[in-house]
Amino acid sequence: MPRKSSKPAHAVRRRSRATATPGAPAGDGVASAPQRPDLEQVRGRIDAVDEQIHGLINERARLAQQVGISKSSGRTVDFYRPEREAQVLRLARARNAGPLRDTEVLRLFREIMSACLAQQEPLKVAFLGPEGTFTQTAVLNHFGHSVRALPLASIDEVFHEVEAASADFGVVPIENSTEGTVNHTLDRFLTSPLKICGEVELRVRHHLMGAMSALARIERVCSHPQSLGQCRQWLEEHLPGVEQVPVSSNAEGARRARDEKGSAAIAGETAAEVYGLKILAAEIEDRADNTTRFLVLGRKLFTPSGEDRTTLLVSVSHTDAPGALYRLLEPLARHRVSLTRIESRPSRRRKWDYVFFMDLEGHADEPHVAKALAALKKRASLFRVLGSYPRAVQ
Image 1 (cartoon, helix red, strand yellow):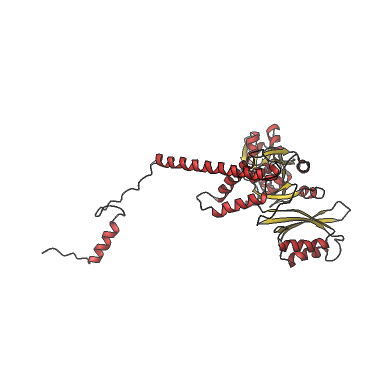
Image 2 (tube, one colour; image 1 turned 45 degrees about the vertical axis):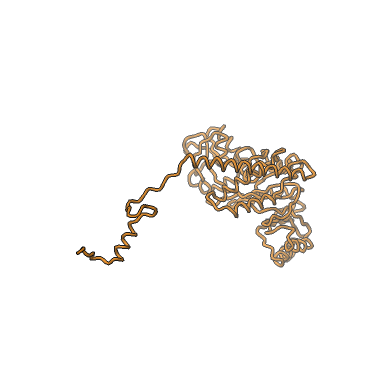
């Protein structure tokens, strides 16, 4: 008689299933190695996808040309619509399913839009230079690389070039998350007719750089006052007693570090490349989230994008009167408009007279915002909408 198994039948069946390899012939207990893709076939598919992408980009460029033909003016600046670009970027971010990160997808779409817009001639964008500043990086992050970036020596010059229409737009710093407001930019709005038509938020990483090979050889550190302030603790700990020299820009500090023995600079990585310096210490900013916000200056206001910010310049006749500031702010609360920032600055009309710069959530054309602004305007002795513009897309 056949020998009977001492184990129940269901136990034997379970063991059989456990040792079987999916996709293997019945009874084969050896797992087969996953089949490696044929590299030539994959590369061929990549080439085919590249061809499709290229064709679609050219089709987009042709459609952009049609938009230009439908406009009455032939200048590139008249075709640029920051609210439309913000909407395109938000849609790209919303439908991104990977594997590319959102930041990479946004960068690619910015460059496509930049190239399409520049078919006739590139936008001219003035910025606080020289080359190698964080403001230049902000220009390229916002407008793409198909623009003509114009480095200027001061914030005043950026305003003047845009006012005179020698530049289509300008980019200037307005505030830093560590050191606060760039007051000179705010003060220029007191006399300038320019509008704010965009903003850029840039994560700022500061590097100590120089021509020397060791920190012990540094006699002075040159940088913009904002950058020195953003690295104050690091400098006190690692370079105690070393002279700190404020200069007009980080790029100017890098130039001095290149040309002066004993001078080092605090600047971005681009400045080290432009001026041929060694990075002696990387990312020396005191806060890991150190971020600078920049404003895009233009000559007109734009329509809502759906996610906007509004900046106001306001004042009251008697700021020392009880409740004067409250009377300005009350319409915002009543109409449920969020105030995200307020700064006071001397009005330059008379001593101890101040104006207020306010940032609000929403666009001035949105009904609830428009009602709040209409009520606020009646209570103010000075009222200007400096800009309603898309919030930074990141």
